[in-house]
Structure formats: C-alpha cells, structure tokens
Image (cartoon, rainbow, N blue to C red; front, side, top):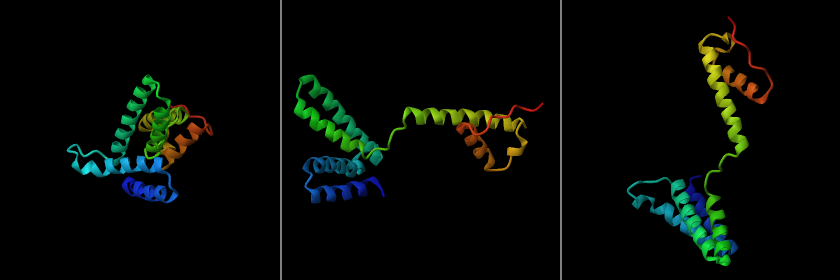
Length: 145
C-alpha cells in the first residue's frame, strides 16, 4: 500500500472516529502528497511528509521560544502523527549490528577472494557464515598459508 492510499484510509478512519486533530494533520499531509505533481523537483511522498514534519519542528522551536505551551503541545502531537508515516529510523544498537556485519562482510569477502575460505565459495553460504560470526555462534577462521 502506497503512502497516499494509507493517508486516505487513515483520513476516513479519523473522520469516523471524530478525531479532529488527527484528521487535520492527515488532511495537510495528504494535500502535500497530492501536490507532488505540481512540484518541479518531483519529490517522493516520504520526502513530502518529511518536509511537512520539518516545518512543524521549526514552528515548535519558535513557539517554545515564545513560551506558548498550548501551541507547543499541539505541535508535538502533529509531529508525532506526521512521523508515524515516515520510515522508522534505526536505533544505535541496530546501527552497531549492521556496521559489525558490514565489517565482517568486507573482511570475509577479501579473505574469500584471497582463497582463505574455500569451503564458502558456494552462493548463499557466505551470508550464513557472516551472520553466524555476527551472532557470535562461530569464531572467524584464520587465513591458511
């Protein structure tokens, strides 16, 4: 399901439930996504939602400087709704795991190209070996000479 359809479905659900705050945010997001065709840069739907969330964050900063707590709370809610339509960001733990796997893949690939792991030349087995290394199931083998 693409983002435009998801926004449309969520808009209908918000109308049925009577959630006016959520409905107004979804309508603005849907409007921005539908206006993509008019933009000469042709951003993606996610980029349009991200740009809207960025505008909300800038407004939030200004209202915080002015000390308007009611508007700040409303903007925090709107930002939460808008970010719900963006892809989830990886946590620091996930990033560390991916970096370790990438490092293991880089060193493992170099070792395979050098002929150190001849038993892993078949397609598909390198990925299994590298995932076992990253999970701590097996120890990396030393290069044979």
